[in-house]
Image (tube, rainbow, N blue to C red; front, side, top):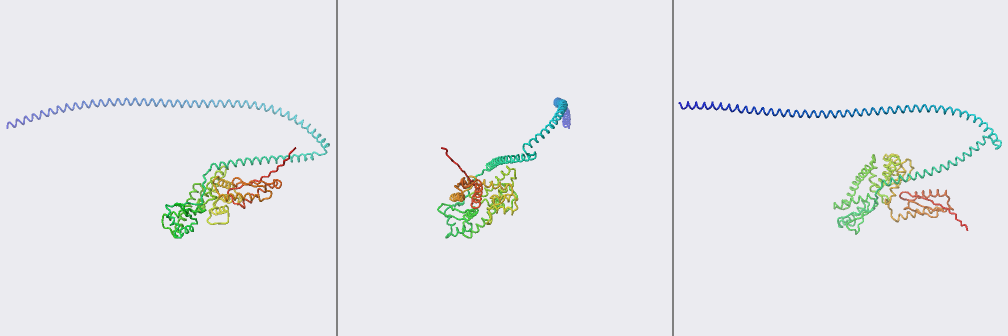
Amino acid sequence: MEPNIISIIVGAAALAVGIVLGKVIFAKNTKKQVEEAQLQSQSIIKEAELKAENIRKEKELEAKEKFVQMKAAHDREVMQRNQKISEAESRIKQKEQSINQKEQNLEKQVKENEAIKDNLNRQIEVVNVKRTELEKHQEEHIRRLEKVAGLSAEDAKTQLIEGLKQEAQTRAISLQQEIIEEAKLKANKEARKIVIQTIQRTAAEQAIENTITVFNLESDEIKGSIIGREGRNIRAIEAATGVDLIVDDTPEAIVLSSFDPLRREVARLSLQRLVADGRIHPARIEEVVEKTKRQLDDQVMEIGERTAMEMGVHGLHKELIRMVGRMRFRSSYGQNLLMHSRETANLCAIMAAELGLNPKLAKRAGLLHDIGKVPDEETELSHALLGAKLAEKYGENPAVVNAIGAHHDEMEMQYVISPIVQACDAISGARPGARREIMQQYLQRIKDLENLAQAYQGVEKAYAIQAGRELRVIVEAEKVTDADSDKLSFEIAQKIQTEMTFPGQIKVTVIREKRAVNIAR
């Protein structure tokens, strides 16, 4: 028992000592931590005070800078206001000085006017006296003249007035002729300027339309299928399309010949589909041709709509749009009709703008001027009159209708744009390389033109120049007078217009010359 008690006591004593030592150590550590915390807090406070001091100094500097800036701005504003005030004061002073000067000048002018008035009054009195004396002398002089001439004053006045009238009429006629000649010269010069500028601004490339189309084949074996047994297939194609198919020795090619580009296009597309399909027989040919015609009609409408959109011509009737699209597949003397109409429209718009007219209306008339060349049915009317009829039918402006019908002088021109369309049509057709003819037809036309002029009495020689666009007629001076020359020129031009077919226009010039030659020996 005693050893246990002793061990318990020793343990308790050891526990007590440990507790005491633990408290002492904990107290020391706590004190150390408190001291460190105090030091740290003091350090933080110092840093905070330092930062606050720096911030305060920065804010003071910013405030000072801002104050300096505001003060400078205020000083500038004050200076500007003072400058404006001083300028206004100087202007007011100048105005006051000017007003004072004007008042002085006015007073001076009033005094001078009064002096002039007094002088004029004196002069008027002198003039009145002299006028009275002059009237007396004039009456006496008139009585003497009447006695010498044997005429009264009224008769003399009448003769004098008649003489002055005749002289004035002579001078007026001469002056009128000079004014007319000068106006013609200026008008011709201005017209040439406008036409040249218009042509230069719308310079377009020209491509001659062909009357044949070459259809290329992958091999010559396909030619037999196209020809068919005893030529049935080729006859069916020609009957359905109205195009001549020329199958010769040309390798891998068939020639499609027709003056109608639309028919050639139908034949080309139909052949293309038949060859691709491989089934070539008369029934199939008719089916494919009909289908191609319907699709080409849709393409024609698309071309017409695209053309109207590109040209800026809006509100066209669907039938007119279709006719515009059909122009793509028509040609005149080798010139594509759609390209010709587009070019004419652009020329009309520019020329109308130069003359101060409505360019949109002129462009519309220029685009539609040849729609009579693409009718659905053949008529006896000329293309100009037929085009005017169609335009009127589909609700076009009367000015457009008149321009279409009058562009070949088959209708009276009633609107200003009508001669513009006529001139631009001639310009487009007269471009070098725009149109072509077969050589024989060209030579025959030139020959017929010269023979037509030589058929008239008094004509010595006739020459067609400038590719048949001008006819020079030389007459015998003994048989044809100057007055007859004008009449002969008009008659020849009218006969050419009614009896011949020609592109553009033909100028007829009659030349009369009489030479009297004598030799002094």
